[in-house]
Image (tube, rainbow, N blue to C red; front, side, top):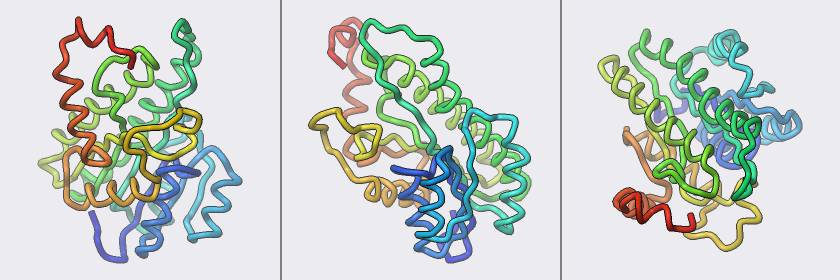
Amino acid sequence: MQTNTQGRAIVVGASSGIGAALVRRLSAEGWSVAALARRASELETLAKECGALTRVHDAKDFDAVPELFEGLVRELGGLDLVIYAAAVMPKVGRDEYDTPKDLEMVAVNLGGCIAWCNAAARLFRTQRSGTIVGISSIAGERGRKGNPVYGTTKAAMNTYLEALRNRLAESGVHVCTIKPGFVDTAMTQGMGKLLWLVSADEAARAILAAARSRANERFVPRRWWLVGTAIRSIPSFLFRHLNV
């Protein structure tokens, strides 16, 4: 990952939260940044604030990605970093099994990640350099009762990013999986008091530090590693009785 002022980056899912914080940090460091998201008004604000190149894009529109990606690379004058931060996590009742809602999560959280990271992988493999960052979640560590499909999309994202990392390693391309805990964004509003809650800007700082250190995966904040290790060690017959 570039550390000078000549870096060029694409951030998908950039209108608010972690994505917007990443755009602000990269722009402040002198990077040329393209920010993509569904909400035009938030993107306009971001463009005025930090001069980012913006495009309105729905992460479920997989067919639009190749042309959009190529156009942004031309406008940026090349590419060094792609960050996929788009995600949805609707409220799900304990007795709710809503297929359209679940498939929306699959499309945005996983399908969009694959579409954008595949596009980046093709370019970076050819130029034999570049960094791909996927924003996953601590929720992908186990199958939880609260939102089964959200956790499933993040677990699948982890496996996909690991496979991509292994495939691209010989080409000098770095793939970094980020697993945040609770971050103060719209997604966590209304969830009550949360353990180790951090700001979106603090999360963005840690994410960029992980990418620059070429970490394969990183919990954000790092102490969430303790939680991840603990919950992975709980036998399934016990885990199913936990209210998580």
